[in-house]
Length: 437
Image (cartoon, rainbow, N blue to C red; front, side, top):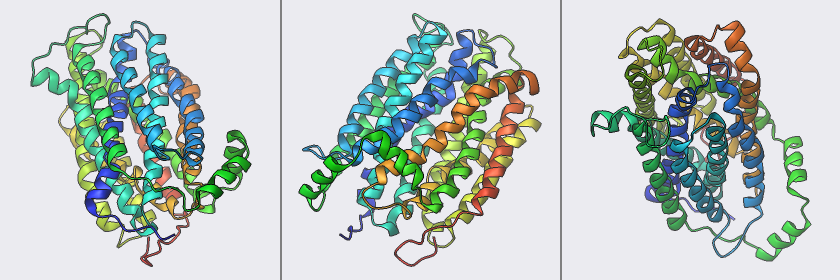
């Protein structure tokens, strides 16, 4: 059955849930390493403390994809997962600033990562469900826009609370975590639920064309684990090639998200004591830098909508990854806070493409009726490199990089360059409109 083309506002509502989802990811990315250091973690222990979230994603992503593919009821196929994930994420966000120990914070990160994934992957699947192939690039670029907009606000919240509303740098209530971070997580919980609920309420999911056949096929299918293994073995060629791109990309991003905020505080601001006001100012500035790359992501997302109709998607992605690599590598040569904004602006170009182009390249190569499980399996190539880095990067930090946070960020830039080279060998499926993808 031919899917109807959706207008701008329908695609807008379909994608708006990612505005809320990104509050969860951005608050986590900008603050979790600092939270761990507030609670006494050393740099070589931080990767292992992030392991809980990565392992959770390894299980949850393909499982939720499979279950949502097989679900149909009065609330639709994807919507029950959207709402459940948003509520659980909000609970984790509210509790996180009250963590009193490292392991309590790691456990809450586990809950937060799992809950975000319960919402996020059905949101991505909605684009492939609702849009015809010719609109896939537009749909994923719109998601990228909202991801950038959400991250822009969420990342800057601690700085905004401190500089606009005069919230002090003191500990937030019953833990060592600053009050600016606590209020940011509370506001993030509200935004997460509100944005996801908007998409769930305004998006109408059509039932399968033959509901009885759908139910018979569901009954006849094997268990979730076998379906996931089958999907891994039967991955389309385009997906296999993109998998290596994702592995290198997310190894690089792992280095950025774990070490950039603390690198700014210690190596640029010169703070050596994580309890000092200068250290906390550095963490807040790093959040503002994350906000800067998110602003650029919003702008570039609009450009990607147009560029995707004129150039091959792999060409766009290659150029964008190179921009991001230059941004991260340049951090090694920066010794004051203002130039960091330009470095993160360059990374924002890459981030806009990372959030949209791989999925746009992939969507046209997926078999009908199995979009959810394949998107879940595809995201294993985001999670697996993070698990590998969580287990091994602490050793590299301690013995190879001398616990230099700046060196870790530069390593992330090098990995983005490798991902750019690998993108050139991807064989794209052509959209049905006949334009070059």
